[in-house]
Length: 182
Picture 1 (cartoon, rainbow, N blue to C red):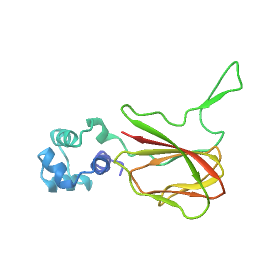
Picture 2 (cartoon, one colour):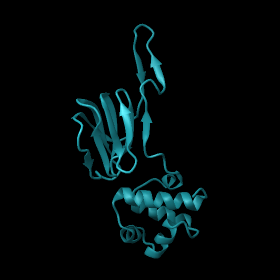
Picture 3 (cartoon, one colour):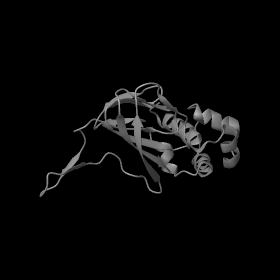
Picture 4 (cartoon, rainbow, N blue to C red):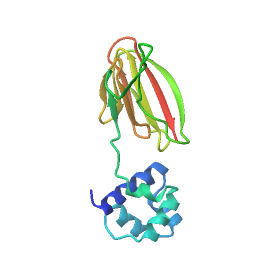
């Protein structure tokens, strides 16, 4: 959906799901009919500004977020790719993989895995994001339905509030996991 109502519909569903609220609860909080919200989430209707503002308040989001198209949910940066900043007086390079959103919390983990069965993680809290850098070996990881194969030096970012997996493809696979929660 690329028309404004389509973007709004997708945003309403995305933000309601992220907040972990039912259709009925958001409608109640916003003071709109459940059928109205259902129509809007289906991409039907012509909502007033007042209705959209009420929904934003109910979802605790800024109004502009309703107009934002969905971002690509998974990002992969291969070793050597990305925007580099190089030091003048040392053999040192930095590549920004991800910036931290305001108010977010990040926890950092070292993952050590052996080939065999995959680690299936259930969805974490709404809005959670995971960043992983494979430092040794190879692994299949990311969203359960669309995992990526990463090698040492590769980076991936995916929504942690959806089912995701990690499966080592080589012995002694190591990775750094940064778990971000808003």
